[in-house]
Length: 378
Image (tube, rainbow, N blue to C red; front, side):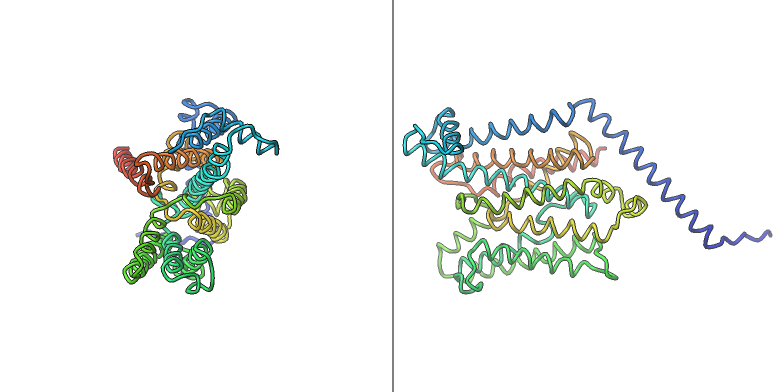
């Protein structure tokens, strides 16, 4: 029998490097081939983004005009224009109050929340390489819901004098720290452990929230908690619009600068390392940004599910997996989607209002099932 030649460590390292390089080349070749089919069906990005922005502006104007008291679109445009240029409006006092103080802040908040949730969904799906990841898979929403329910039922004294929104953000931040701590192994965050820790803590926080609701003797407070947990934009105003808008713009700008890193992480840790990406550091930074943005959004809108799960999937099907295109388009589509959903919540059962999370679940669940069947068939 001939002896099997023993490889030196240098030869082994060379073989591993060659395998990684071949894998990266194959992934890059596949990534180049897949978007070609999508680009043949769609116009270029400089045309898609302005088009979607125009659609968003039209959706905002229509959502402001429609409601229990209708306002003509030309009056809506006039009121917005007059306020923007600081001119005295010729619209009636009632129309001015409805458009500027009641509906426009709510519609703009819906757009900001929708864009933010879509951005977080895109980021998490690439960072943890899990197509089922969404802004609530890490338990951030459940943590915010627990502290918010305590503030509503027991009063601000129970949460160190914080308001409901502030308490929700603190709960989201605490949930983020807990999930990151539980998902670490050998000093590194493991994506599979991250998802498991998030789901486990989400169940824990949800059970604690249910206990808080069960123990409260105030029926109105319990109703408020349930309505908030299902998502609502009814408390929107100019004062609570600034923070989520700035958060979405800052986080969205940061994530746009990280699109190449997101592409590398989506291809796998080995591919990302071969491309010079510090996988552990990049994953921590992206997860922290996504979680903090989720906390800000949940603090002002409650629990709104399926937006961060469905919107990235649908956009990815349309334009391909390149995050340089996927992220900005998903944010605009998410904004348009949530503006439309909020309008449905206001008009479906007038004069009552549906929690927005109910409608997003009713619309998102069938789409999600369709995506599952489509992935199994492909």
